[in-house]
Length: 278
Ligand SMILES: Cc1ncc(C[n+]2csc(CCOP(=O)(O)OP(=O)(O)O)c2C)c(N)n1
Ligand code: SF4
Image (cartoon, rainbow, N blue to C red; front, side, top):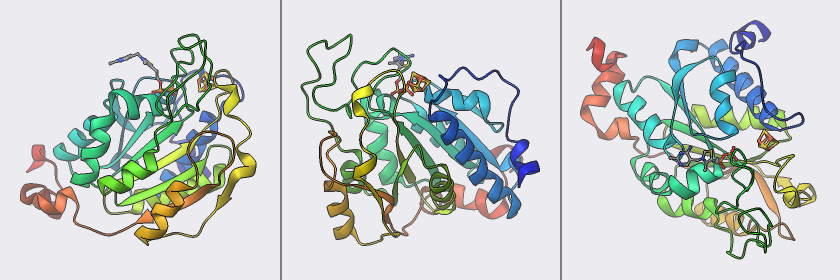
């Protein structure tokens, strides 16, 4: 594993804050990709897109091809890659600000399309790179430079929207549990269709008030019952007092992918070629 995993590293200087759990997300992604490579995939089969934010530096440190994208546009960038070459295993690394503010519409439509790709949202409940403004998942009362009196809007629940939009794989992880993240990312990448992994992340610098969730977290077995999934989604409201935070595969179903529904993409997949080599 370590030789394969080492090839997934770059020589770029790392500028994340010491103690940031982005380091663990990076390590878990490397482990999950290395596992798939050991099972027969090639490093060049993987491609990635990121937004702009602390999470986006994954692009600098993970040695796979791709596009350092635009803030809010991780999903359409990944979709473009899949349309160009449906054989690629495409990973999108996004922020909560990125995905649920500017990028919100894409999050709904990609669930309907169900392309065979994985979206990983580093949800630290703030816009970190731009110094801590509130995002749609920030807890009520979060004080920041832009809202010194505290956030007064109720946080939005991405798991509920993902379910309502028809996302075929929904999982949640704790950014401090690297082994569990690696296991879930592997399952997400092996899922045929759109997989969404929400990573609950502390930020060591901003939104310090979102700590204290550890005792609320617990792991579940993989679930494929939609009624159970809806109940699991209701257990936490993204404020940090009370509730329970289930971790693991919250919902999974098999249904036709974008590639199955689009004859030209099906043909490219069957022939294992891109448009360029058709
Ligand atoms: C189109 C566009 N809108 C806004 C910005 C400004 N911007 C850059 S990073 C960022 C915050 C990123 O927050 P998030 O997506 O939550 O990622 P994090 O830094 O927390 O990982 C914003 C608003 C931008 N660069 N481009
Ligand atoms: S600001 Fe927060 S999310 Fe960004 S690198 Fe530092 S600790 Fe990590």
